[in-house]
Image (tube, one colour):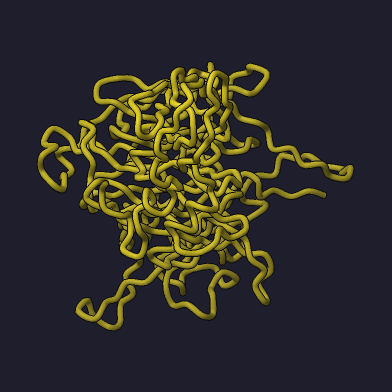
Amino acid sequence: MTRPLCARTLPLAVLLALAGPAAAQQPGGTGTLTGTVFDSLVTGAPLADAEVWVAGTELTSRTDKAGRFRLVGVPAGKRTVTFFHPSLTELDLSAPSPSVDVAAGGETPIVLFTPSAGRVYQAVCGQPLPDKLGAVLGVVRDERGRPLGKVSVVASWSDYVIAAGQGLRRQEREAGSTTDESGRYLLCGVPGDVPVLTRYSYGESAQAFGELNLQQKGFLARSVTIALGDDADAAPAGPAGRTRGVVRGTVRTPDGKAVVNAEVTVLGALGANTMTDAQGRFRIDAAPVGSQVVEVRGIGYRPVRSAVAVSPGRSATLSVLLDRTVVQLNPLTVVADDRNLRDITGFDDRMKSGNGYFFNEEQIRRRNPARVNDMFVTIPGAKVSFGGAFNDTYVEFQRSLGNSATAQNCPPVYYIDGVLARGILDPQTNYPNPDLAVRPNEIRGIEVYPNVFTAPPQYQPVNSSCGVILIWTKRGGAVK
């Protein structure tokens, strides 16, 4: 047995095994034992390729695709039966081992099953399984299949709360763990009803990403691979050791139509993004090797995330389906006109004034940024740094206090379509992150004011002396 996942728990092989010592063989011949092995923990389905054996004998059988097994010549009497499966061994879990009275000269049926999610949660997390929550157990390996210890595992998700005076507000939450020397990790308190993005970090630069969805099952097993590059024996790996692969595929609607200009991004990988062509095809050549998550977004469609295993020098292929976001509204009378961005927002008039820095839709399209904050790297006085959730970026402006020696950095205030953006704080930096609210291909225009006093008066917040960034989206139009 390997050591427990956490110091406060005993090995599950001790906690969950129900077997007692095998009873002494009783005279009376032999019988046949038949049954099914059922996976009640992970898949909720019969478990194929499990090895079943009778304690105190050399009798073994392997389950078929339907989880069925048959053991002939079992000594009659009370016998202990158990089974082995690689998925349980990898997670340091043991199956219950029930006793059964084998009848001589006949068939005795039995159903074997993995431990329940509630029992596993109680054993590894030290408390009863909470409603709508669950646990994730897994193993992290390098590209050669060797377990990696000291890997930081962070699961992040969003929920919505009603805050006094602020209405419905998005809130970022996370759960963390670190792998042991056998590469195992444990996450408790993970929500079972929303997608959860996980980041696996080894050292300063070797990372992998995944998306979890417990689907109210209470337990999920998830193993990942982190690429360490050519010098896989070095720990941890540096940026030069990272290898790359290709992710390509198509994005279509459920009825087979190509989705044009959908944004495809390998999460957490700088520069690993592209747009689909007229046939809905895409190709990303700079995808980090290992377990990754590809996010696909299209205007008017629900975003989709897909897990993919990227191999060095090979192509991983994805076929993505995007469903339209359909909202039933009461009939509206829409008056179409040719008013441009200036008439709605005052963007063009302010751009002519010379105060601040401006990007129109064409300039944003030419830069093809992976993140909104990538647009600000050339702004004088702005500093774009990595270190947010999932290796996102954050922006700081230099705020002078009289001379350069006393200058300080501070986060800007963001307005989206003229409304102060409140619920976009990065959970790690506590700085605002516009990528939590808008994607680059949804933006019509950006205004940047490194000094709050150069911003338009209506966008000068009273509780901040730092800069202001105004973002105007394509959805921020007017309806009469």
